[in-house]
Image (cartoon, rainbow, N blue to C red; front, side, top):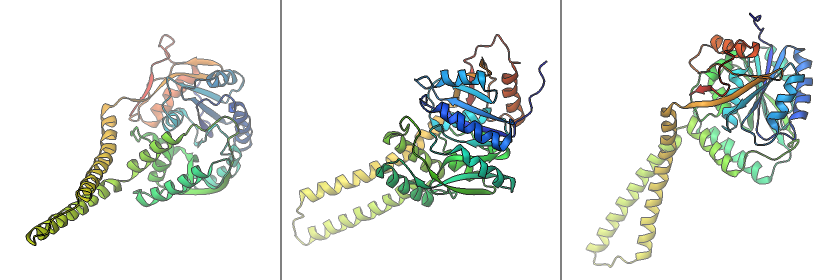
Length: 357
């Protein structure tokens, strides 16, 4: 029987998608920062989110030489938020840092985050005071999004923040117990509450590669954020419907008055424009309701949130027991531990791991 592993002080979770050109530099800087604050009592969980380049080959190879590195390979691309959740579900640390691999968020800020958590913070999140290397369009749309979300969200979500944050074990366990598929992690962490402290910093440009968030994904991400933490669009659609009905009644009254007065109600173009306008309002309202309904359908399917192809530690790939949000945190950590120390069934196929929503 293999001895039980001791939970590390710190886990660093880094979702990766086609990061072959920058993953080595990230690991170098993350290892230096983690060693400075935790000695050798840490782990780095690198999650390959279905990359099509050599990202997994690099992670797997480095795990042979770096005892603190754990590779988690998903069976396909699930998206950043789900990949981050997969990494959090594997992390065993008493404190967990969530960070991207592009080095826009400096791992060296750990040296400031850890003392802040020592003083009683449950979450220490990075708040961007400047964003280098980003287009004017990205900066303007990001500013609009955060301010709009701040007005609509049912819980206060700090402006100009990403998923870059250090969280206590308690917060991570609560976060993993939330079963929703359309995840907006920074909002979910805000919903948890506790003492959350901002750490202002200047965000760097990408070290290498290109952004994984084109306009289409940005719009989808914004919709997930708003629909996950606000029902204001539904209420707005209701009010627009009432206002439209009132205008329609007023137009009918006006038309009857003109008819009794013997005046010809002229204006085919204006009539068509009015009809088109009302139909547009109706379709907008239907679209808003459709966004919420589609999310209910996805939740009702109860499909696995993600599927893990394999977990690599010390250059050896092993299967991982089924993980579900209903598991007690100690059960989840025990399942991960069995994969780490090689106690899982050696005859079990590797591509069988899933986390259900």
